[in-house]
Length: 369
Image 1 (tube, one colour):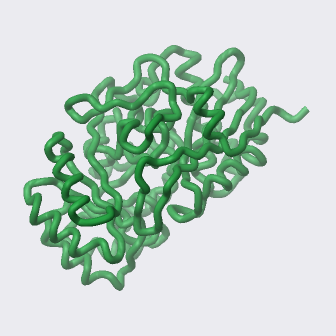
Image 2 (image 1 turned 30 degrees about the vertical axis):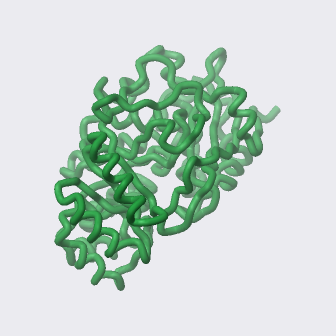
Image 3 (image 1 turned 180 degrees about the vertical axis):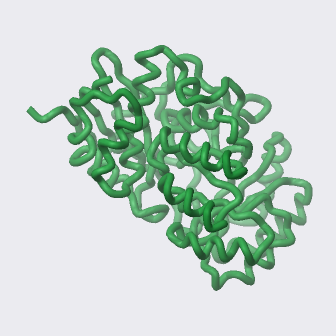
């Protein structure tokens, strides 16, 4: 497959309700969409590193710039038989896994267009339903949170994830777990704590949480291993999982018992498969996470989550959860069983009018003349 050109779009999608975490709040989601062309075929990817470098060092501006100024020109105009060949070509550049994923995922979506094979089949997945959980960021009040949790419980979601941050942690969890003692909860700290907060982690240890997601800084692998030795509740890494090597080392030192795989954050779908396999061989369950993408990006998360070791319900959302109108021409919709179905035909693509309305900047990358 020859990648002839890349059309790159920085888009801004307004949220229905602000997304609040330990590192701040977002009123709009800034994302980068990439359309790749190979002959008569075109296909899309989406990566969302968020507007500011608060989740990880990358931002929407760095992703757009790196794809359009460096990564894209280095890739277009060449033949690639496998996604690994795309990654090998990009390996000269250090880090920047979100930007690399924006290109690598296009290889896969082009391949499904060219071969007529559903993406989950190309990835080695099964045609099966993918279970989704409910997630709640930091809310305006406890009453608001409890009401939202009750709605999720009544709807039949299998688990609930709660964002925590200083001032919205211990008391909130005491209230929630006492109100819903039979519900499966886990918390997401978004790197907001340190080992100095060991008393907090020990205080929540008896609450029966499924796990604690990314309690410490993304680079603090040894500290995660130390925390894991100090408490009974399992640790799950998220922001730490920026590469295959990072996951391998986290497992080697005992830093985690679960791994969240976000295709955009890990550098694409080929790396997602590798991490899935490493975790499977180590007896560590994985689950899929998203970054509040439109259905263009969220669909890729569903496709990868059809692999067999994705056993914990994922961070997957219907389009209506965050957006009045999705960017894509096809909405993401939950089944009554709170699952998503992989796509047998065309993957979602941006609606042209909505794309034009939400585009902040765009640029086309073609081979140098």
